[in-house]
Image 1 (spheres, one colour):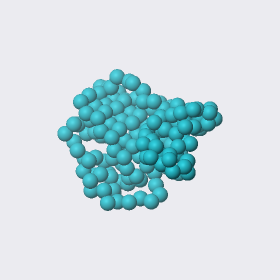
Image 2 (spheres, helix red, strand yellow):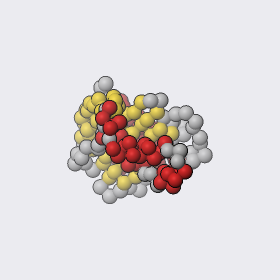
Image 3 (spheres, rainbow, N blue to C red):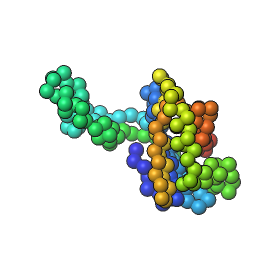
Image 4 (cartoon, rainbow, N blue to C red):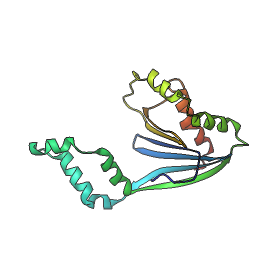
Length: 177
């Protein structure tokens, strides 16, 4: 799923993956209105197995040939992920939220959009020695008019990452499906 390009002063893209499931939540704020898009991965099309780019990368990754080992080290997994993404299907839903009616959510988004607020970085630094063997991975991308930040983390909790946990879970309160 490609990020929508809504005109906004704040956008948040939360990608969660684990236990065979994948979800994406996108939040776009403009003035006192927010559009939240929810997407759940349904399937990956069979045509992926015929894509020449995908087959070549897969062949290189699975090769036992010693002459291919150096080539394998140069594979950019982002390229592989983009190819798979082209063939991935999602169920989607969206909702508009009036922030005048949801003040707590408005306050959270204001704090997220504040370029001086470095709470996510502090939380990640404090939890850098925290190891999760089996959990849900998250990628949280926050874009404001003058700053972009991306955070990768595993199984955040209200104790380990209270602010990031709020960023991930507050939009879900508005989910309809």
